[in-house]
Image 1 (cartoon, helix red, strand yellow):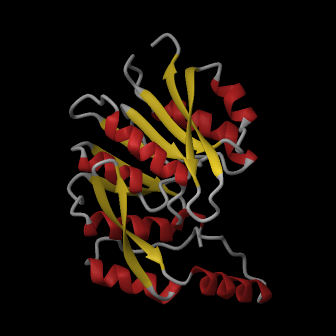
Image 2 (image 1 turned 90 degrees about the vertical axis):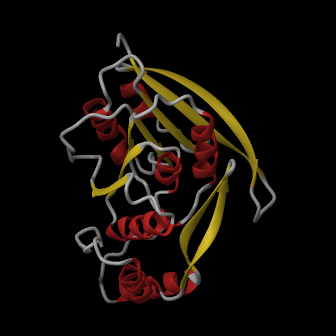
Image 3 (image 1 turned 135 degrees about the vertical axis):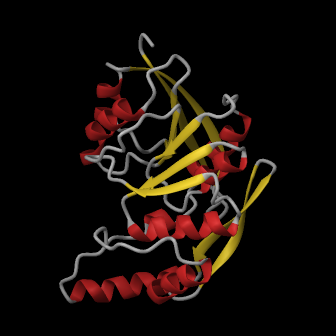
Length: 241
């Protein structure tokens, strides 16, 4: 799936048609973050789609679970934090592992110029649809990028991301990516959120050599299970900047 390329310059209707051909029924759901409401495209029958993926594996095809399609609790926690954060006017934002670009859209709705990146083409497709649906296309650039190896050729005032430490293979390359793309100024920061279950020890061990880090925690209740969980928030600034 990662090798698929879509023409994201098509009208929103044509883009939704592509989504329907792959995922079946889709629809917009309102996601409230602080005082902002965003319309986010969701797969209506995810279990049916997962069954479709299982059938593909029987044919020997490699599949990727659409984890990017879910609006994770960490995304909501980070999004709320972003609406309260004292960003400088006119700053540049990079969202890594954007999924369906909820936090990138939060930043765009605040008036910032945002570059949204992900590796999965369908994540970029949903991101583009969401950006168009919310009228944010003038503030958001969508780019395919693998943060374990790619370079965007520029630096950003802030880098944001949630649940990006999803497997050990990305830990150390992600530190290099952040180092290569975060502006070399005192105010530049990385803002990340993730479930407390994700430890990412090798990431933080390597990042400690380059960044000063501050950690905080936010409690939330899972609406489906009723369980109390914790999201860890991280702020990272260059040492000596």
